[in-house]
Image (cartoon, rainbow, N blue to C red; front, side):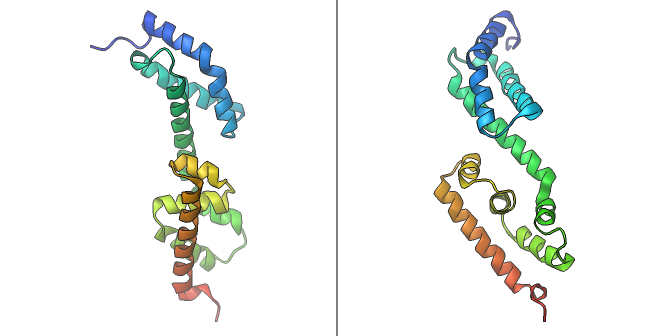
Length: 168
């Protein structure tokens, strides 16, 4: 049977980790671009996960905490993107665009795989850097750029094939 994560030994371990690494985790989250309440929420989430894994943690869990922070950031961004959706991106780019054109772009985005769609949206619509995108997807910046190029090419093909794309 596992020990209560907040038992006295585990509580001391978590408190020691928090004292030793809280500022560093906060700085990492700020480096990822977070501030205000979102920063506080993500910082807290990292240490809630640490509490859940208190029994497994070593005394120096710095690298593990950084990995957890990256995972928390990726999950936050993924959830946020699901809320923003491609529709929001299309509307952001062209609020006055013809509904038919929006439909064509939407079909083109739907033809992409999930990763390619997210990469294109994040890079072209939301202005994130390739370094940020590559880090979140666990790839090199060069690989992220290759994925952007391939996704754009596929998107152009789908749009070019759609006869409604060009006025007569």
